[in-house]
Length: 239
Image (tube, rainbow, N blue to C red; front, side, top):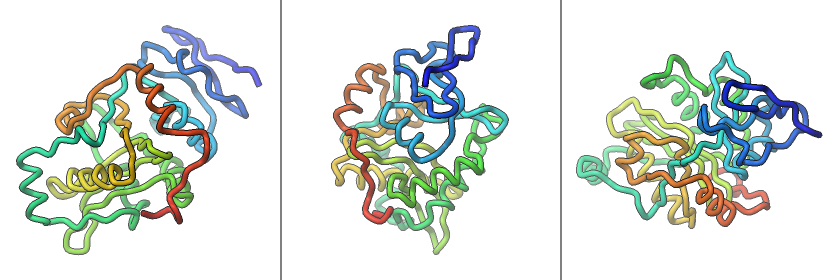
């Protein structure tokens, strides 16, 4: 099926309603950076196809589904992960219990309610929550969680396909809870031979953790090597 297109001020963006595949990655716009397609759905085949092509959804509740592949791309190689002095002290205290995949829906729901600078709302709508919970049940989406006195107080989630991990969002209700969960996740992924963590867009916080930008061509070359064409799922959807 051939693409229809939306004409935007800075170029054309493909409409992927129906069975249309994603357009070539080089068709992504420069402004807004990385917008490559509009429409489609959040079905598991569509989401997995997107991630395998270095594309992710990001949109507001009042917008159609928008798909992105920015250039440059923020990534973290597990070996480059930096633990600050303050976080190191927190980890030594073992204040939090880190768990994996015991409360995925609670983690993504908590992420959806976090207020973030420069954002009036959240892209993690109920449809997104349901879609990623389906990915979790199939073994692709995983959560890392910080627990304190039996309560979930921080965590993060993302999608793993083979040796790639695509970070999505994190939350905390207690200082350092999300950082501890993320530190546990990085260690966990490195032990499972995951070689690159996609952080999507640059932030000062991610940079402080050791993440840095690479150009999209380099990102896609590495992704192709790490994320093969065969479906991958963690056994039983849990780690």
